[in-house]
Image (cartoon, rainbow, N blue to C red; front, side, top):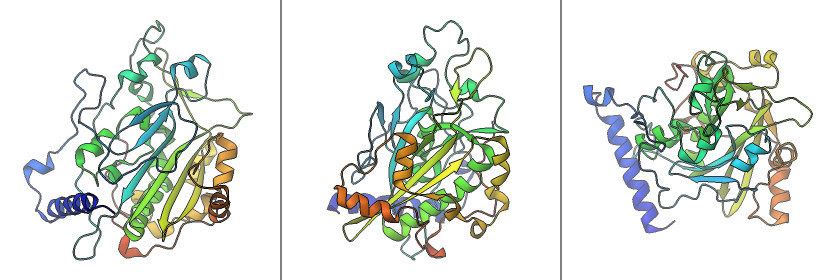
Length: 343
């Protein structure tokens, strides 16, 4: 770890600790993400912080790439769209690095966040999805999700509360469609969120955690879309994957998870975080291997590792979450969730 990296982590931890320790005021209670104001760009400047390498393990293949402060995303290209790719309006994968955020008292820090934007952010680079298409009357991707929130959320791949650990502005910047896809509401606000909480705790314990997440499409199944006529069709994945990686003593380990959402009756298997204690989630139920995720997605993970290293990593990747003590959790299910989808 470089001196610059140590200074950066210390500054982030100090700022977050002050935000937590300061009594709420009218000013910070009103903190809210800015609107897009008609531009096709993120509302806040976004830069990858020193000491972070979101795509450390070089996930392949890479398509239309976005590299922002809180994440790296590989999105479908205009050529993919013309070729009728299944990845309509959604990323192929998103990866990011998250660091420990602990106070001087040895307790996890919960950084301040801002109220989510009502309308998510659109980008010029993805405007090919609606520009020069006369049948698309409502420009942008956000319109496709309108009216579907009860069933389908705009589901983050890189979580907002993870990005808040960099700054509340970077938390706002996660509300962009190169970082989202249709996700069962109960999954997004339940088991998936419980895994996001676990990832924070793992980062606090191990020092840092890398996350790689994205959609899964089954080759022999039809791909449905959301959106009313006149909006961009947005693909509904048959499942979602998430891979967590840590590095200890120079050795990389990974854990892989697969969350199905191909059938409506699977919705009932997910329980909302707001009413279910964290301890009631058995995340090992979703465990799979990195090789299995590669097989169903066509992606290649950990390409920077040797074949020997990757085989050793894969052999343990399906064994479920690493043991992480309660004291490392900054967020736990069982109470109100301020990340509930509300539109």
